[in-house]
Length: 298
Image (cartoon, rainbow, N blue to C red):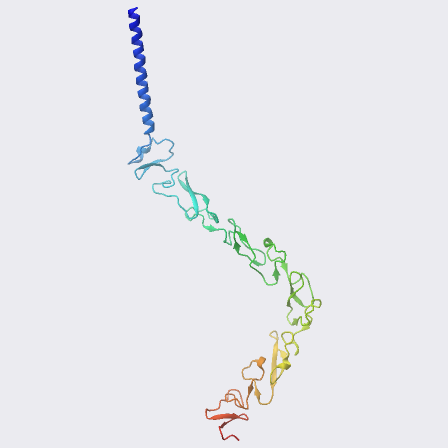
Protein backbone atom coordinates (compact mmCIF):
# COMPACT_ATOMS: atom_id res chain seq x y z
CA UNK A 1 0.00 0.00 0.00
CA UNK A 2 2.87 2.37 0.72
CA UNK A 3 4.46 1.64 -2.67
CA UNK A 4 1.14 2.32 -4.41
CA UNK A 5 0.84 5.71 -2.72
CA UNK A 6 4.38 6.57 -3.76
CA UNK A 7 3.68 5.69 -7.38
CA UNK A 8 0.51 7.78 -7.37
CA UNK A 9 2.38 10.77 -5.99
CA UNK A 10 5.07 10.45 -8.66
CA UNK A 11 2.42 10.40 -11.41
CA UNK A 12 0.71 13.48 -10.03
CA UNK A 13 4.01 15.33 -9.89
CA UNK A 14 4.72 14.48 -13.52
CA UNK A 15 1.32 15.81 -14.59
CA UNK A 16 1.94 19.02 -12.67
CA UNK A 17 5.33 19.52 -14.30
CA UNK A 18 3.82 18.97 -17.78
CA UNK A 19 1.06 21.50 -17.11
CA UNK A 20 3.52 24.14 -15.95
CA UNK A 21 5.78 23.62 -18.94
CA UNK A 22 2.82 23.74 -21.37
CA UNK A 23 1.45 26.92 -19.82
CA UNK A 24 4.84 28.57 -19.99
CA UNK A 25 5.30 27.62 -23.63
CA UNK A 26 1.82 28.91 -24.52
CA UNK A 27 2.49 32.20 -22.79
CA UNK A 28 5.78 32.58 -24.64
CA UNK A 29 3.98 31.81 -27.89
CA UNK A 30 1.42 34.53 -27.18
CA UNK A 31 4.19 36.99 -26.37
CA UNK A 32 5.85 36.09 -29.66
CA UNK A 33 2.57 36.75 -31.53
CA UNK A 34 2.06 40.05 -29.75
CA UNK A 35 5.55 41.13 -30.73
CA UNK A 36 5.31 39.81 -34.30
CA UNK A 37 5.08 43.42 -35.75
CA UNK A 38 7.74 45.46 -33.92
CA UNK A 39 7.11 49.01 -32.81
CA UNK A 40 10.24 50.20 -34.60
CA UNK A 41 12.47 48.91 -37.36
CA UNK A 42 15.62 49.63 -39.28
CA UNK A 43 15.09 47.43 -42.33
CA UNK A 44 12.29 45.62 -44.17
CA UNK A 45 13.27 42.20 -42.75
CA UNK A 46 12.15 43.29 -39.28
CA UNK A 47 8.60 43.72 -40.63
CA UNK A 48 8.28 40.35 -42.36
CA UNK A 49 6.27 38.82 -39.49
CA UNK A 50 3.64 41.60 -39.38
CA UNK A 51 0.29 39.82 -39.47
CA UNK A 52 -2.13 40.79 -42.25
CA UNK A 53 0.44 42.89 -44.14
CA UNK A 54 0.50 42.25 -47.89
CA UNK A 55 3.55 44.38 -48.57
CA UNK A 56 5.41 44.89 -45.26
CA UNK A 57 8.18 47.48 -45.32
CA UNK A 58 10.17 49.59 -42.92
CA UNK A 59 9.47 53.27 -43.61
CA UNK A 60 10.94 55.98 -41.39
CA UNK A 61 11.61 53.49 -38.60
CA UNK A 62 8.08 52.09 -38.59
CA UNK A 63 6.58 48.95 -40.11
CA UNK A 64 3.90 49.76 -42.67
CA UNK A 65 1.89 47.90 -45.30
CA UNK A 66 2.73 49.65 -48.57
CA UNK A 67 -0.30 48.07 -50.21
CA UNK A 68 -2.76 50.03 -48.04
CA UNK A 69 -0.87 52.80 -46.21
CA UNK A 70 -1.99 56.17 -47.67
CA UNK A 71 1.19 57.86 -46.44
CA UNK A 72 3.49 55.19 -47.89
CA UNK A 73 1.55 53.85 -50.85
CA UNK A 74 3.68 51.57 -53.00
CA UNK A 75 6.83 53.26 -51.72
CA UNK A 76 8.02 54.93 -48.55
CA UNK A 77 6.91 58.56 -48.39
CA UNK A 78 4.46 58.32 -51.28
CA UNK A 79 1.45 60.13 -49.84
CA UNK A 80 -1.96 59.80 -51.47
CA UNK A 81 -3.12 63.41 -51.69
CA UNK A 82 -5.01 65.05 -54.56
CA UNK A 83 -7.02 68.29 -55.00
CA UNK A 84 -10.74 68.23 -54.12
CA UNK A 85 -10.58 64.48 -53.43
CA UNK A 86 -10.79 61.85 -50.72
CA UNK A 87 -8.08 59.31 -51.51
CA UNK A 88 -7.06 55.76 -50.60
CA UNK A 89 -4.20 53.34 -51.19
CA UNK A 90 -5.32 50.21 -53.03
CA UNK A 91 -2.84 47.44 -53.80
CA UNK A 92 -0.02 49.96 -53.53
CA UNK A 93 -1.61 52.46 -55.90
CA UNK A 94 -3.14 55.81 -54.91
CA UNK A 95 -6.76 56.05 -56.03
CA UNK A 96 -9.57 58.59 -55.70
CA UNK A 97 -12.28 57.28 -53.40
CA UNK A 98 -14.64 60.23 -53.77
CA UNK A 99 -14.74 63.85 -54.91
CA UNK A 100 -15.69 66.97 -53.01
CA UNK A 101 -19.17 68.31 -53.70
CA UNK A 102 -19.21 70.20 -57.00
CA UNK A 103 -16.11 68.52 -58.42
CA UNK A 104 -15.46 65.42 -60.53
CA UNK A 105 -12.51 63.40 -61.82
CA UNK A 106 -13.16 63.52 -65.56
CA UNK A 107 -9.69 62.75 -66.94
CA UNK A 108 -9.01 59.71 -64.74
CA UNK A 109 -5.67 61.12 -63.58
CA UNK A 110 -4.89 60.86 -59.87
CA UNK A 111 -2.33 63.67 -59.75
CA UNK A 112 -4.77 66.48 -60.51
CA UNK A 113 -7.52 64.94 -58.38
CA UNK A 114 -11.10 65.95 -58.99
CA UNK A 115 -10.11 68.63 -61.46
CA UNK A 116 -13.44 69.70 -62.95
CA UNK A 117 -15.87 72.14 -61.24
CA UNK A 118 -18.99 70.50 -62.68
CA UNK A 119 -21.21 73.30 -61.39
CA UNK A 120 -19.88 75.74 -64.00
CA UNK A 121 -17.85 73.75 -66.56
CA UNK A 122 -19.50 74.07 -69.98
CA UNK A 123 -17.94 70.81 -71.25
CA UNK A 124 -18.76 68.82 -68.10
CA UNK A 125 -21.94 70.33 -66.72
CA UNK A 126 -23.28 68.42 -63.73
CA UNK A 127 -21.31 65.33 -64.75
CA UNK A 128 -18.32 64.36 -66.86
CA UNK A 129 -18.91 64.62 -70.59
CA UNK A 130 -22.17 66.54 -70.51
CA UNK A 131 -21.47 69.52 -72.77
CA UNK A 132 -23.72 72.56 -72.90
CA UNK A 133 -24.45 72.88 -76.61
CA UNK A 134 -28.14 73.68 -76.80
CA UNK A 135 -29.66 74.25 -80.27
CA UNK A 136 -29.56 77.84 -81.55
CA UNK A 137 -28.44 79.12 -78.16
CA UNK A 138 -25.55 80.41 -76.14
CA UNK A 139 -25.70 77.99 -73.22
CA UNK A 140 -23.43 78.31 -70.18
CA UNK A 141 -23.42 75.93 -67.22
CA UNK A 142 -25.00 77.22 -64.00
CA UNK A 143 -25.23 75.10 -60.86
CA UNK A 144 -24.63 71.96 -62.89
CA UNK A 145 -27.39 72.68 -65.42
CA UNK A 146 -27.15 73.94 -69.01
CA UNK A 147 -29.13 77.17 -69.31
CA UNK A 148 -30.00 79.51 -72.17
CA UNK A 149 -28.16 82.82 -71.94
CA UNK A 150 -28.98 84.12 -75.42
CA UNK A 151 -30.67 82.87 -78.56
CA UNK A 152 -29.23 83.00 -82.06
CA UNK A 153 -30.67 85.82 -84.22
CA UNK A 154 -34.13 84.86 -85.46
CA UNK A 155 -34.71 82.15 -82.83
CA UNK A 156 -36.40 82.12 -79.43
CA UNK A 157 -37.07 79.83 -76.50
CA UNK A 158 -40.85 79.97 -76.75
CA UNK A 159 -41.61 76.81 -74.75
CA UNK A 160 -39.29 77.75 -71.85
CA UNK A 161 -37.65 74.32 -71.97
CA UNK A 162 -33.87 74.63 -71.79
CA UNK A 163 -33.17 71.13 -73.07
CA UNK A 164 -34.29 71.90 -76.65
CA UNK A 165 -32.63 75.31 -76.71
CA UNK A 166 -34.08 78.14 -78.76
CA UNK A 167 -36.42 75.89 -80.69
CA UNK A 168 -38.62 78.41 -82.46
CA UNK A 169 -37.73 80.04 -85.78
CA UNK A 170 -39.33 83.46 -85.45
CA UNK A 171 -39.20 83.97 -89.21
CA UNK A 172 -41.96 81.57 -90.12
CA UNK A 173 -43.99 80.51 -87.11
CA UNK A 174 -46.72 83.16 -87.57
CA UNK A 175 -46.35 84.78 -91.06
CA UNK A 176 -47.57 88.30 -91.85
CA UNK A 177 -46.87 90.49 -94.92
CA UNK A 178 -43.23 91.66 -95.15
CA UNK A 179 -42.56 90.59 -91.54
CA UNK A 180 -39.14 89.08 -90.87
CA UNK A 181 -39.55 88.07 -87.21
CA UNK A 182 -42.47 87.80 -84.82
CA UNK A 183 -42.59 87.32 -81.06
CA UNK A 184 -43.33 83.91 -79.54
CA UNK A 185 -46.99 84.81 -79.00
CA UNK A 186 -47.34 86.32 -82.50
CA UNK A 187 -48.49 89.62 -80.98
CA UNK A 188 -45.41 91.74 -81.63
CA UNK A 189 -43.52 92.48 -84.85
CA UNK A 190 -39.82 92.24 -84.00
CA UNK A 191 -38.41 93.06 -87.44
CA UNK A 192 -39.60 93.85 -90.94
CA UNK A 193 -38.06 92.77 -94.21
CA UNK A 194 -35.54 95.22 -95.59
CA UNK A 195 -37.24 98.25 -97.11
CA UNK A 196 -40.50 97.92 -95.17
CA UNK A 197 -41.91 99.22 -91.89
CA UNK A 198 -44.99 98.86 -89.72
CA UNK A 199 -45.81 102.52 -89.95
CA UNK A 200 -49.53 102.32 -89.10
CA UNK A 201 -48.94 100.21 -85.99
CA UNK A 202 -51.54 97.65 -87.05
CA UNK A 203 -50.50 94.05 -86.49
CA UNK A 204 -52.81 92.39 -89.00
CA UNK A 205 -51.33 93.97 -92.16
CA UNK A 206 -47.74 93.40 -91.06
CA UNK A 207 -45.06 95.71 -92.40
CA UNK A 208 -47.27 97.52 -94.87
CA UNK A 209 -45.22 100.60 -95.76
CA UNK A 210 -42.22 101.00 -98.05
CA UNK A 211 -39.51 102.98 -96.29
CA UNK A 212 -37.77 103.90 -99.55
CA UNK A 213 -39.93 106.94 -100.23
CA UNK A 214 -39.39 110.65 -99.57
CA UNK A 215 -42.09 110.54 -96.90
CA UNK A 216 -40.66 107.48 -95.12
CA UNK A 217 -36.97 107.32 -95.92
CA UNK A 218 -35.14 104.55 -94.07
CA UNK A 219 -37.76 104.48 -91.33
CA UNK A 220 -41.34 105.45 -90.69
CA UNK A 221 -41.92 109.21 -90.65
CA UNK A 222 -38.45 110.31 -91.80
CA UNK A 223 -39.33 112.92 -94.45
CA UNK A 224 -36.73 114.18 -96.87
CA UNK A 225 -38.78 117.37 -97.18
CA UNK A 226 -37.72 118.27 -93.64
CA UNK A 227 -33.99 118.51 -94.49
CA UNK A 228 -32.92 122.12 -93.62
CA UNK A 229 -32.18 124.55 -96.52
CA UNK A 230 -32.09 121.69 -99.03
CA UNK A 231 -33.94 119.77 -101.68
CA UNK A 232 -33.48 116.08 -100.92
CA UNK A 233 -34.63 112.72 -102.18
CA UNK A 234 -34.63 109.22 -100.70
CA UNK A 235 -31.91 106.91 -101.98
CA UNK A 236 -28.62 105.31 -101.07
CA UNK A 237 -29.18 101.68 -101.99
CA UNK A 238 -29.33 99.38 -98.96
CA UNK A 239 -28.24 102.21 -96.63
CA UNK A 240 -31.42 104.17 -97.31
CA UNK A 241 -31.22 107.84 -96.39
CA UNK A 242 -32.17 111.30 -97.59
CA UNK A 243 -29.67 112.55 -100.18
CA UNK A 244 -29.22 116.27 -100.83
CA UNK A 245 -29.93 117.21 -104.42
CA UNK A 246 -29.37 120.95 -104.05
CA UNK A 247 -29.06 123.71 -101.46
CA UNK A 248 -31.00 126.93 -101.09
CA UNK A 249 -29.16 130.01 -102.42
CA UNK A 250 -26.41 131.09 -100.01
CA UNK A 251 -26.36 127.77 -98.13
CA UNK A 252 -23.84 124.95 -98.44
CA UNK A 253 -23.46 121.33 -97.25
CA UNK A 254 -19.87 121.46 -96.02
CA UNK A 255 -19.86 118.50 -93.60
CA UNK A 256 -21.40 116.03 -96.08
CA UNK A 257 -23.91 114.99 -93.43
CA UNK A 258 -27.35 114.94 -95.08
CA UNK A 259 -29.29 114.84 -91.83
CA UNK A 260 -28.48 118.49 -91.01
CA UNK A 261 -29.00 119.56 -94.60
CA UNK A 262 -27.17 122.56 -96.00
CA UNK A 263 -25.91 123.70 -92.65
CA UNK A 264 -23.60 126.59 -93.66
CA UNK A 265 -24.74 130.13 -94.45
CA UNK A 266 -21.90 130.95 -96.85
CA UNK A 267 -22.83 134.63 -97.00
CA UNK A 268 -21.67 135.26 -93.42
CA UNK A 269 -19.58 132.23 -92.30
CA UNK A 270 -15.92 133.37 -91.84
CA UNK A 271 -14.56 129.82 -92.30
CA UNK A 272 -16.77 128.96 -95.28
CA UNK A 273 -17.13 132.31 -96.96
CA UNK A 274 -18.72 131.95 -100.37
CA UNK A 275 -17.55 128.33 -100.58
CA UNK A 276 -16.71 125.46 -98.22
CA UNK A 277 -13.26 125.91 -96.67
CA UNK A 278 -12.71 129.55 -97.63
CA UNK A 279 -11.43 131.20 -94.41
CA UNK A 280 -11.30 134.96 -93.92
CA UNK A 281 -8.21 136.49 -92.23
CA UNK A 282 -8.53 137.75 -88.63
CA UNK A 283 -9.15 141.34 -89.66
CA UNK A 284 -11.81 140.35 -92.18
CA UNK A 285 -15.48 139.49 -92.00
CA UNK A 286 -17.61 137.52 -94.43
CA UNK A 287 -20.16 139.70 -96.15
CA UNK A 288 -22.40 138.51 -98.97
CA UNK A 289 -20.13 135.54 -99.51
CA UNK A 290 -16.90 137.56 -99.67
CA UNK A 291 -14.10 138.31 -97.18
CA UNK A 292 -13.78 142.06 -96.50
CA UNK A 293 -11.96 144.22 -93.97
CA UNK A 294 -14.30 145.05 -91.14
CA UNK A 295 -15.80 148.58 -91.50
CA UNK A 296 -15.04 148.69 -95.21
CA UNK A 297 -17.79 146.36 -96.36
CA UNK A 298 -19.49 147.34 -99.55
